[in-house]
Length: 272
Image (cartoon, rainbow, N blue to C red; front, side, top):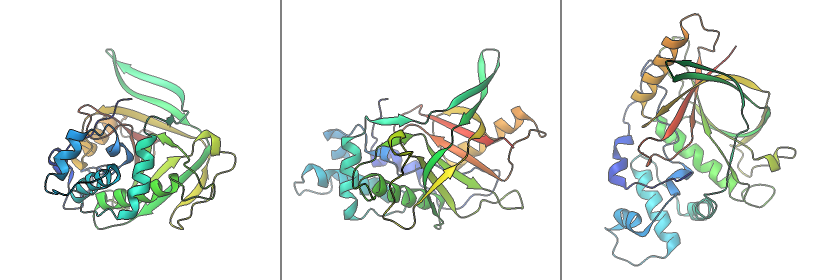
């Protein structure tokens, strides 16, 4: 999987300033993610540090770029994120896919409308944040998971990364408004499923989840609140009002970094 970085100017569209009501969407996902560190080259990094004339080593350059990306999301990245950023960058090609089991594929005139699949039982690392803005919750939660993955765990080592990253969004009883808290989850790699390392951060919880069956619709491109809202509405239209799926929450699966022009994402509905 080739993942590319984009400059801060091209990331500016991802900044949101208000919380959206439903059906404007579930929100832009994983706005600061480990994928933002992939594919860095000198020219791209220089785009973000031209205002700093002081020479920097590679670690400083990575942190400066990360801080520039974070600033577009109203989030600050502390200097102690240098280690996790470096570790993720060094291991960016070693990602393990979640072992889904396909159930069915529904097509119309050669187009895949949606797939049903089983997400296996297993241990997940989860963190819930409820900041003022959705993108702040996702960004700050993911930075915590980065630290856990990068040695802040009882194993004292880099654990590895799985894809996709899942964001869980819940809807209030009025059916229109998002709950403030957003949960970000990472499926632990197979090596650590039998005996999950304990997180150093008390905000991170290791949970065991039974298998779930999801209806998944793939879409390509941006993951803003508006685009997610549109994609969820499309899947509701395809399934129909009587579909036996959960109605008070949705999941968004993120596979690629926001620099990929037609990056892959999925909307997940949970089968009842």
